[in-house]
Length: 121
Image (cartoon, rainbow, N blue to C red):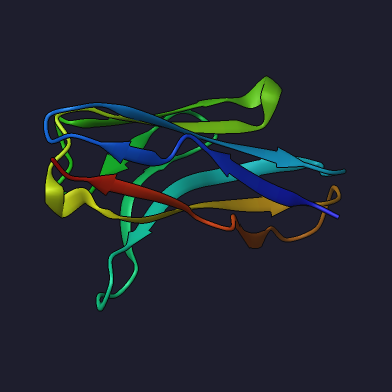
C-alpha cells in the first residue's frame, strides 16, 4: 500500500522559513508529477507548486519567488522550501503525487494527510 507522509510544518513568524517534505512509501513502479496544495480555513484547496518527473516546475503567482519545489527521485520525496512567509500562507499543506504501481498501468492520484503551517507573530 502506497502512502505519502509529510513532515516539516509548524509555527513560524512572518518573514521566516520552513521546509516541507513528503516521502512516498510502499511498493510502486514510478512517480510522475508531484505537487503541493494548500487549504486555508473557509477556502478551497489550491495548487501551490508542481514538479514533473523531469524537473519542470510551476508555481502559484502568490508564492512565485518565495517558494521552491524540488524532488529527489531516488528517495521518492518532494520538498517545498518556503521563504519570506506571510500570514496569508497559513494553511494545511497537502502533498499530491501521480503514482504508477506497476508497469503498463495508468497512474493514480495519492494525497498526504496534510501538515499545518501557521505564520503568525
